[in-house]
Image (cartoon, rainbow, N blue to C red; front, side, top):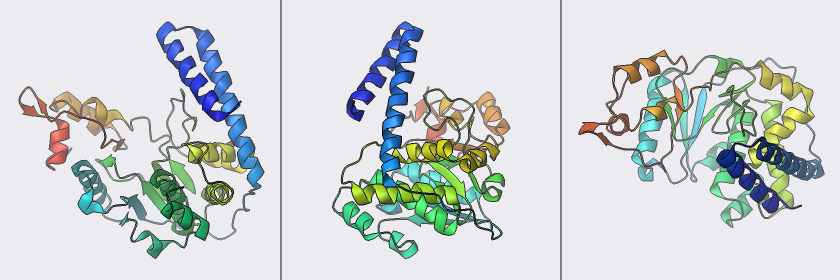
Length: 302
């Protein structure tokens, strides 16, 4: 059974489960998701990648935050600019690096087959950014944030202190990551063997393939690491839960912020939120500027 068919069956089963509430369709979706995982794990097995042993050197914190907008900030949507400014404002003790197509080679010497296939359009920007984030985290350490991460508080120290961490969350429904990571926010120390394994899987995959088998290949690579190797299972389990409220701000973004909304956001101990520049958020609410409007004009503060 090929992956295209499996993906269609998963979507249909989920749709019918949502429509009918019948557990039959939930079990069907779980069955096909397991088939998908087995198929992708088989592809990764064939790459014959083995993890490196953990280094005996003392791990060091890297206070570097990596954010990528390939075309450069000048051409970025206003929301992206405000998100990046929110990161810079809340991380005064970190070096925030804005990556573009032009300056990525200043930080990384990627394999020739990666560069060639990216330039030829065989590797998309989304897949290239997955390769870049794992490569940077392994070589330098630090935190990778997508350009639409909005921050209202300082980064919790755990992201610098742990060998690997992400926005871990409790709800695992339909989540490939099982709640243990979000690819849009990853943190590791320099030389981390987990991100190296995922990086090497992506390198080797594109060495042997010219087309993408699965859009979320990075997530299945992390899942492969978690399920195949006990040491990575332990590393993921050791990180604190920091991502339960990662979408909290979306509840209020299209409304004029009132005292209750501000209080709710203030009580969130993490203050790291994932937005989207593709969403159509409202800018006015009964004639008043919405939270989104305040973000865009840079007047929103907690």
